[in-house]
Image (cartoon, rainbow, N blue to C red; front, side, top):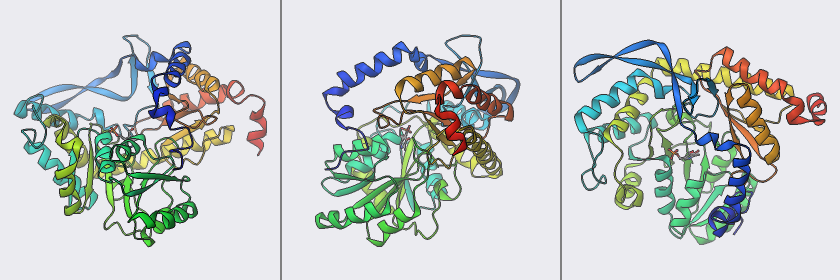
Length: 433
Ligand SMILES: Cc1ncc(COP(=O)(O)O)c(C=O)c1O
């Protein structure tokens, strides 16, 4: 079998995970003071307050900033460019209100799995709303997008699964747990996929698993990949974790010439929806099968009703005109960051979205970049091997519709002033080419 991703999968699953790989990574991060990432954050309270209605009473709730935080109880404010809350939904008073009312109605926890005692009206209403948003027959909600992917992967026991090499770890974990015969094809490479489909078809009907927006590279699934999969009659799974509500169309993704019928979509309510959780949406038969067989659904306490209510409020809010305005602003903000970073000579790979990698190519430079940015009041995640292939170490920027022009100036000025430190002597060449 081809290796999973462009890096050694043993690093993620073998004894190395507990031994050299993780210990080395931990040492690097500690040396660079990067356990700062684990320090508790607090959202900055804005001067205004909103009124919400909780249990029939109007209550003031503080307005929280979608983009500015303090860390570890300190006074200094940072602008966060590392959150997948792409539309700033997590601080919306509408989500807070929905969650508070559900807490009053259903309590803080459910006390069991969905099949025991953990289904409330909020769970059922959310699943209906998700199916509507996805233009699907039905949906099934899980406590995390991770669980939803694991459930889908585990359903492929023994069957051939062709996964894009950048597919998320949770999908691969699910396939492994289900003993699916996973093979990876080169990222967004329809020719490579087609060759592998010919081979895989000898062992049964293959599934092709892709992401609508890739989480580490910020590019979108190539339409040709989906068309090839459909031409071969493969079953298609789209992990739409990073496009749910952030992108256009049902499920936040649309591909010309691709019929969505029969495609299984995994989405999240943990990113642009600003809450937590994940789901599978598809045909009634497919969703019924997951309900009967998905182990993360059976063997885990269901998410609280307050989470479901918040996710449902996000679907309502972001499917309407407010969501349209925020999506337009998200696209404008992201295009500005991509264009200006490229002009400065930074390598942002093939990003076309609000996830923008700044590929720096080694651990030391990436760690230096996170420190330089932090000194300028910017929080941005460094992604190191083995999470990305060695030589592809990067800063991963997540742009939000709620970043102000001034906050984006602050980010871009920090990158501009750090060019020599981060790009070194190649800087001038890159800008010219
Ligand atoms: C592509 C992709 N799929 C699934 C997940 C899992 O979603 P969640 O964070 O809700 O568990 C993630 C999370 O980072 C992701 O990036």
